[in-house]
Structure formats: structure tokens, C-alpha cells
Image (cartoon, rainbow, N blue to C red):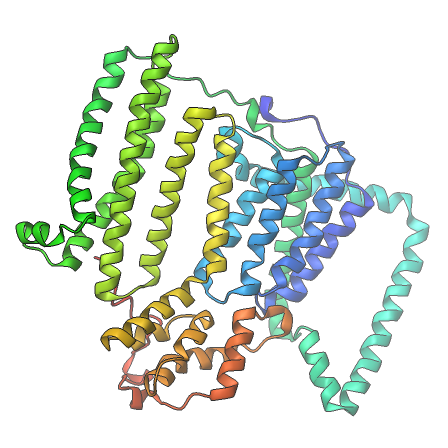
Length: 499
């Protein structure tokens, strides 16, 4: 671990400390009311703190650092656009990982795999580092703190007094202040204090990492002992033959041979799709593991060895792409039979990214693997960003509404558990299905009516639609059990889930 650590960083400067304090304050003020645009507003001073710390350490802005930083901020914009919690959570986690790449600046596999650990490592040492920087600045400017504190105190007092008077004099002005200023109450103090600490230590960790990141690329991953050609290639050639035999059957199916295959297997379309998709997804994942292990023990004596490695693994990659296409086709069959759900769209998106990862591995075999770690990490981040921007809940609702138009089949309780992202599509349903699907979403939006900074674009759009057309049905009219009978479409599970 000592080899990975750089020299001790310079003390935190005034600008760095101020940006850290601003992050903590904004976290306490905004995050307690919800996400929306809040995460971006909180992230901006945290990024500024990291920028000042990196500049003080003499680090230069590199192209990939800028790419990772922009990508992280873009991912944090997903909560400002979408209401669904699951793509939002995925985007936030990915943004943290991408930010660790920007701060560490590595390019190899160790940096991509272990970079996020550096943020955790900076928590303990970063607190001491920030405190020493604050203490040094305070000792050097004791005479200047008094006027600053007095100025801020007088300004805050004037705003509070006259703001309260104007709010009491005009209801419209009071509503404006209410939408702009977070709600403060004694009951929220512990909650906001926790967000203050989260913002404080999060910004300290980012700034400390930017000042002195762990040098993960110094970690040496030694290749495994090279195997003899036949010892290495024979198992993979046998695996390629198995893939080829399987894909021959799949190509027959993909070109219209379903009736023959289903007649021989005595399965329905949905059973054929359901029983195969998860196995094919697992096969794709295991193929990536096999490729990684094969490269570790591949023969590397000369040009003939390199040609053999490219031929065998290239063939395996091409055959795996057919497996990916087959898995996606099976999912398409299952969606046609039973409709689209969150689970299905998520695993289909994952399968598409796995196919992209295999294409990148093939490109690395042709053009060189120097950029492969960054390319895979960037493609994963781009996939998460695209997934969030595409609004999976809206796609699920759109698919089920179109399926209802074609087949007159729909599971309204499941659709009622979607987020506000689904409202524009669900609004096209006829009554009473429309109101039954929107009833619980409308209640939740009414209960969570926060300020503009805590409201996503999807929530604002949904509120506008619901305000214009309203919701008419009750749970009794929809044929659902009441709350007293312990039925809740949010918690009853997914009737479409694949076993």
C-alpha cells in the first residue's frame, strides 16, 4: 500500500475549505427535500473544491479527467429529469465511480477496478487534512474574520425580518418564498444534520483525493504462466464448436423456424423464451470470464502464438454475439406474450451492454488493448446515462399501452406502481383504466409536492397532465381491495416477473 501512496499533499487552501463548507451547507438545505436538481447544485461546489485542491497540488487537467468529470455531472442530472428511483440510484452510484476515475487519473485495470476505494481511503486522512488547512487559514487571518461574520449576520437578520413581514403582507409573495426556501422545522434538524455531515465528508473526500490520489497504476498485475499451445487452445476450440452447434439452431429459429423447434420441444413461445433467456445471459457473462482467464494464460512466444490467440478468441467473441442476439430475441418473444416490465427492460439493457463489451474486446484484439479498460468503463457509464435518459418506466408504460390497444390485455395494478415518468403514456388509456393506473401516482405527487429544486422534469410534466384532466376513479371502482385489506400495488410484487 505504501508504494501506491504519493507524497503528503499541501495544506487545504482557503478556496478549497470554502467550497467544502458550501457543499455541506447546500447538502443540509437542499437534500432533505428530495433529489431533483439538488444533486447537481450540491455537486458543483464539491467539484470546485476538488479543482482547487488539484491545482494546489500541481496537477494538470487532462482530457480523460475532463471526460470523466462531465460524465459524472451528466449522470447526476438524471434525478433532475426522471422520477423513477431505480435508474436514479444506478446513475448516482455510477457517478461516484466515474468521479473516482477523474480524481485518480489512472488508465489501467487497477485504476478502473479499485479507483472507488480511494475515495473511502481519503475519508480519514482527509478530515485531518482539511482541519489543518482551516486552522492555518484561521490563524493567519484572525483580524479579518470578525467583519465577515458581522456582515453575514446582519444580512441574514435583515432578510429574515423583512422577508417575514412581506410574506405576511402578500399571500402570493409568501407562496413564492415557500417554493424557493426549503422547509425548516425542529423535527427536520436531525435529518438535515445528517445531510450536512454527508456533504461535508463527501466534499472532503473528493478534495483530499484530488490533492493526493492513490497511484493505482503502480500496482503490477503479473500475467499467468504461459501454457503450451494445445493445452491452452484445445479447450477453447471445443468450446467454440459447442457455441457453433448452438448458434446453428439459433439461426434456424431466428430465420423463422419457431414452429419446428416448438413442436419438437413441446413448449409455447413464452416458455421457450423464458427457459432460455437467463441461461443465455449467464453464458454471456461466463464467456467474458473465460476470455479474461484465457488471455492470462495465453501463449505469447511469437507471432504465431499471437495469431492463434486472436483466431481462437475472436471466433469465440463472434459466436458469443450470436448468443447475445438470441437472448434478446427470446426476451422480445416473452415481452410479446406478457408485456414489458422493469425487470425485463433492465436485463435486456444489460445484455446489450455485454454485447458492446464483446465488440470492444474484439477491437482491442485488432488495434491493441491499451485503451480497453477506459473504453469498457466509459461504455458502462454511457449505458447507465442512456438508460436513465431513455426513461425505462415511460418505455414500460408505452409498451403496455400499445399492447392493450392490440390485445385488450393490461395489468393496471402493476402499472399503477410505476413512477411519474409513466404518466404521459398512461394518460392515453381509456377510462376507467386511465384513472385506476394514475390514482396512486397522483396521490404520491400530491404528498411529495416540494420546491422547484426538488422536483424533476417528469414530476412537473405529470402534475401538469393530472391538473388538466384529473383522476376520477376510486379503489372500489377499479376493483382493487382497499388499504384495510392490505393490498398495495407498490408492494405486491411483479406479476410479470420471470421465475
